[in-house]
Length: 200
Image (cartoon, rainbow, N blue to C red; front, side, top):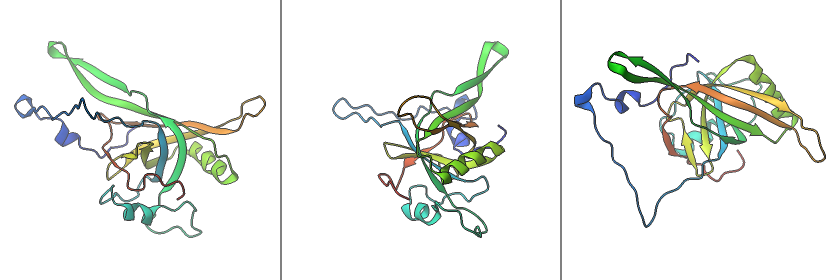
């Protein structure tokens, strides 16, 4: 996964020991904050789609979201498709290297979202089929807590969805797959301005 990610690595990681800072923390016995973690939406755009100016601006989102492909796509095509999923993100696979003095360096992480789509109409089926073409997408993912991950410039990732047809009474078709990318740091987080919307 050679994609370059846009995140806050440069400001988050110090240049040397003199620059190291201990960031703030916040714990509250009276009102601790918990956030629902299930991934509910994946917002997908072309890999060369424009970045957001402000990922928390609802107008930017509504201007770009278009569920139906235009007969003549806009140029540039910065549209976003909202895909409703049931998903999770387990801990990433951490890559390390041992260097002189027995020091261990974290050199990267391989991240994976596990997703399934249970709305299996003909339009969604054709979308799922196109993920076999090895494309790279720019995407954001949104949790049930109304948090969007990916920052202003999204995550450059690959997505593969496969048709799964289980046997048995009452079983339904699903598209099950993964979204994968490499980055040393977890993606930036923000409030999703369209949280609670169910139709786009």
